[in-house]
Amino acid sequence: MAPYLWTLQRVLPACEAGQAEAWQAFLDMYTSVARGLLGVYFRSSGDESREIWKRALRGLSANDCECLRAFDHQAEREFLTDLRAYLLELAAPGLDPALDLAGPQRPGTETLGGILQGLPFLHQQAVFLKLAGYSDAALDKMLKMPPAATERAIERLRRDHSAFLNRPQDECLWPAAWLAFQRSLRAAPGKDCPPLRQFVRIVDGQASWYDKAPVEEHVTACFRCLERWCALCEVVYWRGKAEALSPGEADELLSLLPIQRRPGERQSLLARLLK
Ligand SMILES: [Zn+2]
Image 1 (cartoon, protein in one colour):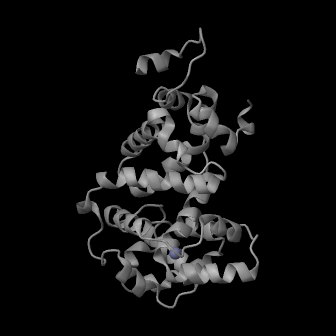
Image 2: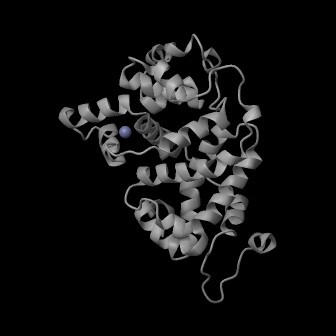
Image 3: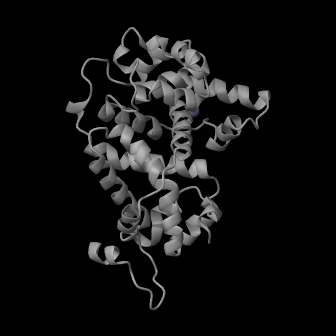
């Protein structure tokens, strides 16, 4: 199949069946998303990010792709938020709290509640993503706001979190603490929380004001949903910045995956050397 014809709905079942072409497409579509996300939280080491992606691929494909099969298979953005949560769970234990920025109050529901108090929905998203480590330029794109509006939205951080402002790179300043905080939000019970599909419909402009207003009201009062909403912004951002894999990198990653080889098919020299 031509590379541009692969979609999530086609690629996942074919990966689960062990098709090399599908795994190649999966790697082309999603490696740069993983690389982007991990780059924010592992700013000190590209090698470490690459290792986590390899561990993730092994984990996703182990036991007849048991883990991959549990992810959303219908819609790419939902799938990517599942993948993001999986990657961050994998990455978090390797982060050293001693490397977090010293000084600002630790992220937690109380700290965040104080910062977000009374802010409108869009400004809450901007502050949350800023505390995660995103640059102003990334926020402009993620939230589709002009730079002056982004600047106003994050003004609340000037007093106690000024170290997070005016940074050109996308890099988390307190990755161990921030990922632990996000993890606690993901694990919180979400009995009245709307499904992610509703967030996607709002982002796509497909929801009426009557559908949208209660969801936005819920998210402004629910940190679990604010984390899910911002996760959606993150994966859309990184998916839009997709970069092609180098042939050597693709071969190395393919060698980790459970590919059913056709009779007589030969592996590339590099794949054989890496075995
Ligand atoms: Zn909620």
